[in-house]
Each structure stands twice: as C-alpha cells, then as structure tokens.
Amino acid sequence: MILTKILFFLFITTIPSLLFSQADTVKTYYLNNKIESVIPMLDSLKHGLSMYYFENGNLKEERPYINGKVEGVVKQYYENGKLKELFSIYRGKREGITTYYDENSGMIENVKFINGKIEVNKVPFYVDKNDDVLLKKTIKKITEKRTGVFLPPKIDEDDFKDDPAYYVKAEVMPEPIGGMEVIYKKLYYPRTAIDNDISGSVEVKTYINKKGKVTKTEIVKGLGHGCDESAEIAIKYSRFNPGLIRGQKVNVQMIIKLEFKLD
Image (tube, rainbow, N blue to C red; front, side, top):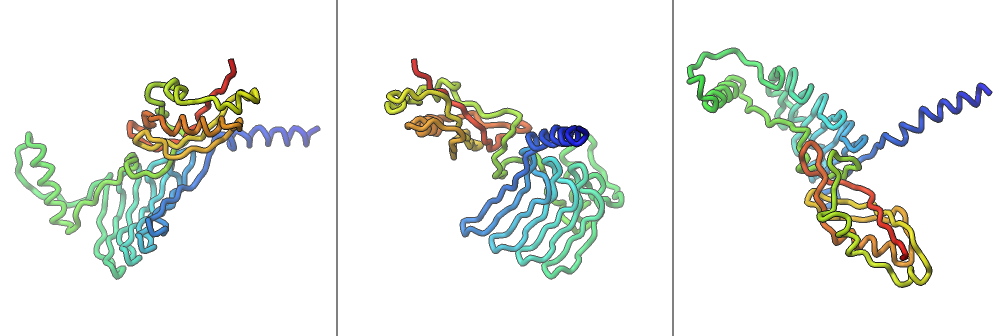
C-alpha cells in the first residue's frame, strides 16, 4: 500500500514537468553545410550555452542564455579560432572586467564596466546642458580616447530579427488573414473520402515564418483518402498574421485542426 502511494506521488509530480517543459536544440547551417549555430531551447526560449561558428568551422562566439536572456560569461573569437574578447553580462548589461586580445591571444587591455558603462576617470568638459545629443557624443569621444577601446555594440537579447528558431509558444500566435473560413474555402472534400463515408478531423503541424508565410507542414493526425493532402494544400496556400514575442515578429510552429464533415 505504501509503495503504491509512493509510486503515485512520483507519477503526479513527474508528469506535469514532462508535459509543460519542452527542451530542444536548434541548429542552423551555412550553404556549405557547415554548422552556423547551435542554440539550446527550453519552453520556446533560448536557454543554455549557444554556440556560433564562422563559415570555416572555427568557433565565433559562446553566449549563455537563461530563459531567453543573455546572462553570464560571453566569449568571442577571431576567425582563426583565437580568443578575441571575454566579458560578463549581468541583468542584460556588461558588468565587471572585459578583456580584449589580439589575434595571437596576447592580452591588449582590461576595461572595467559598471552597469553596462565603461568606468573612467571624470574629465571636465563644458557643454550646454540642454543639448543632449552633443552631451552624449562628447562623453563617447572622451571615453574612447581615454580607454583606447571603442564602445562595444549592445547585445540585445530581445532582438528576434535573425532568430532561426520556430517557437511553439508566442505571446500572440499566428492567425490566418481573413480567419479560418479563408482556409476552409480552399479545402475540398475528396470524392474517395465521401464514397467511403470518411469524416473527422485532420491535424497539421504548420511552420509559419516572420512574414506570415507557411514554410512547412506535417500531418500529426490524418484521415487518409485524400483528406490529409487537401488539408495541407489549403493551409500552404493561406497567408497568416505572424506570431509576436515582445512585440517582434517571430517564426512559430502550431497545430491547425481542420474538420471534414458529411452533411
């Protein structure tokens, strides 16, 4: 009896994690079939150490993610495979020492960052306080001059422009332009299905890119007798409003269910 209760407890505590936590790895390739990136995913968000490569096969960058945000030590490399830059990201900003290297792995300089900004000694300068643009330009020039290092570009973990992943969850899921009736207008009931009294639903896994175009379909649940092909064609030739995460367009994969009913 006690053993049964223990097994039941393990079952009910394990099954939810299996149902609601989805881990995957997205890989992209160059035209020469060499690996371009390896991105671990968890519940449709980047999670883990993402690896990016040059076309020659050498490592380009190691970037750690936690729940879709860059967090931890980032390493960037030259095309010859030598370490180029080493820095830490904390709460979306550079923090601590950033180390720069030359192409032979010789250290160039250590630069300290605090809350995403280079720490420098104060330099007096005079500028109209109302001229914000001039103020920012002056600070940037002084910073670069004193450190000898150009301010690095910001790493924006919320930029999905070049993200190749197809998310299974999005804040706004794709919808067919004009509604589901647009897809149903393209759907035909195959004669062989009618003659064999076939009815029911077809479920199609649909891959929709940032432009709202269907790039790929897979039958998850079919009826046969031509219904599966009819469902895929109807979906492929429909356009969608793309999915959104944080207001940005993203690739999404979703299940679309189409019903075949006999009058």
